[in-house]
Length: 426
Ligand code: ACO
Image 1: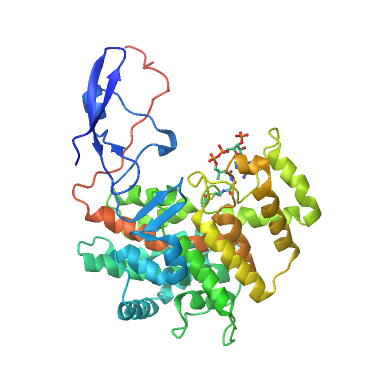
Image 2 (image 1 turned 90 degrees about the horizontal axis):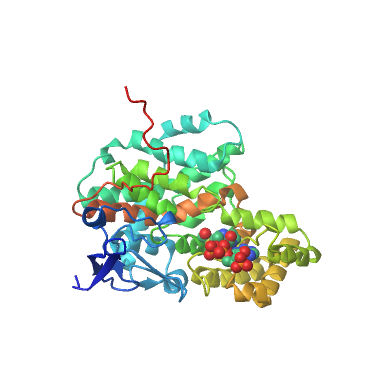
């Protein structure tokens, strides 16, 4: 730890307080205010935690101004173009990329664990038709705790990795089953001869005893989307996982909380909104009208898939997906009206002064929405795909928290604005 400090002066009393500065390996320095209340008798206020580091973490690094994203020190473009989603999941969980042999063993292990207990099918039966797959998925992950209760109070790192494998392997199966049930379609069991991504597409799109032909670019596109979503530092759903974990809740409860947080429109639902908006715009000749609406300060309309809170120059994940979208369109001969609308919006926005001056570039959701649609994945499954991708990140963060000494329960304070004591004096 450095001996640098920040001094806070209370200008009501001229009292000075020193707070230590913690130095990260990369990124902004962090002022340790954990003794702030004890020293000053005041709380700090940070709506939406925009200036607050909530934990120490060695997993993911983001530099929004440079458009940089790294997992365990590896740049996202290296992982997304040279490695697979399962390499990335292994890296997040173990801190190192797997050797060829370790990766093979890891794939085998996940395949072995991809089936769910037959008893769980009763759970799917209990939901009404058209239940949203995200609701079924979060209930399904919670329900895993009733089948694998040996993981509820684990201590050893090996047990934690076994739990991680179990959840990562079963989530695609629960996800695919939830969709098939919501559509009244027969469920398709995992095929042990298929890879992780291919098997998921097969369970989602296939029919029993029917071979579905998938082009390698389709598998690569989904694999890349999962890799790009695998972790993103202390975002809302990861923070939800960590807050629940700080109570020593079991991992299934924590991941289920992450799923529910991710379901929100402002988080995992954005790529679905992109496609809904493109469908609403409908035709290339309507694009100019909607661009004008997006620029009108008196109109709340926003162009979905543009802008990002953290990435202000470009979203590195969007750059990678833009290339995948191009490859996919060429190989699948996608020339739908929706693709033409998307292309036109992208062209205008990248050159229009309004968008350029506000640094409103296409974000990951702009391209992932279009790609998932091209992969024939139904819109209500877009957030579910995000969950499959993010699960290794959530579990890595859960393990990291559990391995830290002196875990403190997450318990923020507040700026109370309610009535003063008005209890009648007896
Ligand atoms: N369309 C039109 N104008 C926009 C858009 C947009 N998509 N995004 C921002 N602006 C404008 C705002 O009106 C504002 O203009 P002003 O300065 O004239 O008032 C300016 O750009 C800055 O906007 P803020 O809302 O302050 O930017 P912020 O960084 O807070 O918001 C956000 C980022 C929420 C992503 C925003 O750009 C947005 O709503 N985008 C559309 C939704 C979307 O694509 N969300 C997915 C984000 S990626 C992810 O979460 C994985």
